[in-house]
Length: 427
Image (cartoon, rainbow, N blue to C red; front, side, top):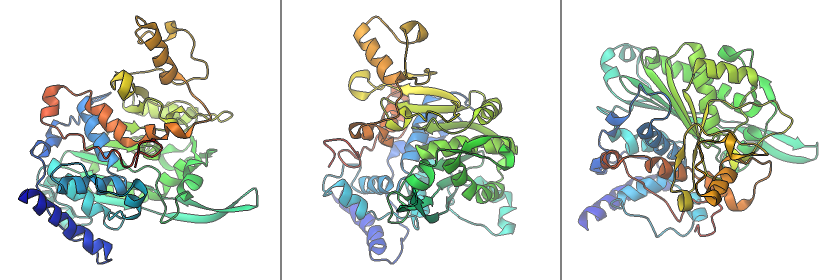
C-alpha cells in the first residue's frame, strides 16, 4: 500500500510542474524486475521475423504516441495496476501531461532500464563525442520537425496542411534503434498531418540516396524534413560501426521503410526494418526493387486482422508491395496466430490452392481467414478503426513468445478500455 502511494506521489511530482507550465522535472520509479536490462534478449543480428525482437519493438513504437506513454507512466506509478479513474479517452487526451517538449525525458525514463549503463544526453561537446568512453552508454535523441501551410480544396474549402515527423534515436554501444511515431495532432490541429502527409497520395521523385525512384509525396516530404538531422545524429552516434534497426507504426511504418532503404543505400548497416500497421502505398516499382535488393528479407511488415490502414489500396496509382507481409489473426477467434510470409491483399482472393499455408480442415474457419487476411478495399467502416490500435500489435507479438521468453521480458500494459478509438466499449 505504502509503496503504491509512494510511486503515485512520485509521478504526481512530475506531472504537476508540467500541468502548471513549469517544465518536466526528473523523477524515478521502481521498474518491474522483469524489464531490467531486457534488451540483452534482443537479437541485433537477426534477419526475417524474430519474435522477441518483434515484441520489444512493438512495445517501444507504441509508446512513441504521447497519450500512450502518459498512460504507461501512470500505470507504473500505480504499482503496475490498471488505471480505472480516468473520465474518458477524450478527457485523458486533453489532459495528457506528456508533450513533445518533454517527450525525450519521459521516454528515456520509461525505457532506460531496458539497457546497460544509460546516459540520456541530447547533445555532447565535440571533444566528448570523439571520446570512445561515451559510446559505452545508451543515449536517447528525439527528432521532431513541423511544417504547416494553409491550402484549399478545389479552390473553395480552406484547411491546414502539415508535415510532422517524430522519431526517437536510441544509441547503444553495438546497436542503434530508430523508432517512428504515426499520424498524430499537429499542435491543436487533429487533421493537418492527415491532409498534409497521409492523403498526399500522388508520387514524387525521391532525392539523395534514393534518386531515380518515386515515393508517396507526403511520406517522402515528411522523411525529407528530418533527413539531414537524422544523418547528423547517426554520425554523432558512430552509426557506421553499429547495426541499425528501424521500426514504426502506421505512418511511422511507412517512414521506417523509407528510412531503412535510404540509410542502407547511404552506406550504413541497416539490419532490419519492422513496420507495424504499414500502408501499402509507399513507392513505385523502382523504389520497391531498390528496397528489396538492398534489404532482402529485412523489411518485415506486420498487419493485425482487419486493420483498416492495411486494407486500403489506391487504384490508378503505380504502387507496388515492399518487403515481406506477416499477418496476425484476431484475438477472439484466431488467438493472435501469426501467418508469416502471407500473400498480399487483393480484390478477388481466388481458391485455396493459391494459399497453401491456410489449413482447410475446418472449411468455415479457412474461409474466415482467407476473407480477413487477403481482402483489400478502398472503403472502410468506422467499426474497424480500433484494429489500427498499436496495442493489438503488442499483444499479438507477445502471444508468439514462449513461456520461457515471457518470464524474462516485459509484460502487456494494456490501456483498455481507454485509447481504443472506434471500439464501442471504449470509454
